[in-house]
Image (tube, rainbow, N blue to C red; front, side, top):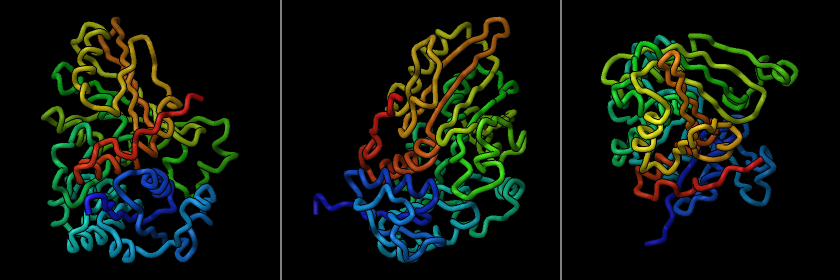
Length: 347
């Protein structure tokens, strides 16, 4: 039937990324959510766990096999180490598998083992997987069967750096990244650092020079540069629910912010979800909240010859579930922005 909708399913639907998939996909014009699963809440209505869905989506949570069986597209929003066997089932049954976890993000098994302390369980599957930040990799995924959806920092940062690095006018050994994230990036499980009395009115760096997103950031930037690139990356936790703001410092032979602005506008001229701020404005996480936009502001320190690039995203949308849907849209030939045109709130 011409207007028949594609059946999608979500494994791990009660985590933060999973429930964002539910929220966004319920408004998607080309798909219907056919099944959802959760280990912790199997058998319960998803609206019992998230009452905002009451009378909107009250379906009961099943298991991963029921999701795979009932779906043409399977999203997995799970911790690392759990997605490979699911991907194997999906490939065997000719289902599109989109992984929001880390299992397929890194090309090198040695690098994966170093940072995640685990080998690839299905090395052959990794030859079939495609890593995709849509604005940088969209031409690779149109026939993909396994799509590795990037992490949140690893979306915000490469999108901010890509035009300057691609231009060849950046000094690649000078990249310093200072990034801040809201607490939803740590997932739904409670930890001491995300416990309200510990987090509220606090502001701290964490995993300094040891965050697991470092090899993913370097992998993407190195591919753009055509050579190995190392970065200094320091993430911080701030007491807000959503949002990532990354400030990137990189020496360049560009003369001023006007050169940067023209360069970035040209690079992203066909990308509807990248917003280059007018010169003199600075991005703010509240202006991309609940949306699939990546906002970028450009600044230049003439005293040091250093570009200062600031990018901001909603870590749960562009940094996770929205980008996964954008990847699905490209892979299936839908309009790239289908289900993703929400306007950010103004306050």
